[in-house]
Image (cartoon, rainbow, N blue to C red; front, side, top):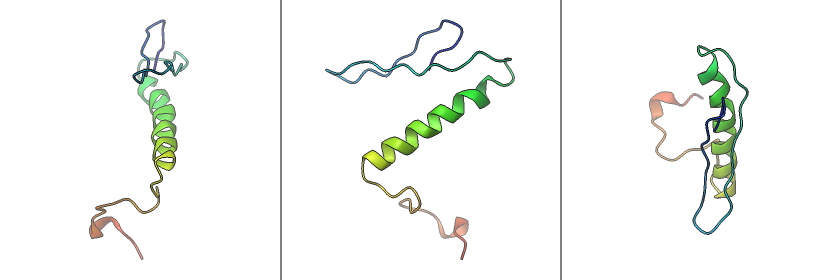
Length: 66
């Protein structure tokens, strides 16, 4: 993730680097803007690995509803 000219990249070994750019906003809103692409990244990586995002492992019964 990068904003304001800062650079941060995801570089797998032997692969090409990927950079996620986010717009610069007020400092109090920057965490909200940053979390959206990170949640999408986590979702797509989970699906790519073949896991069911709606049925996570080790989900405590206290958080499930019927």
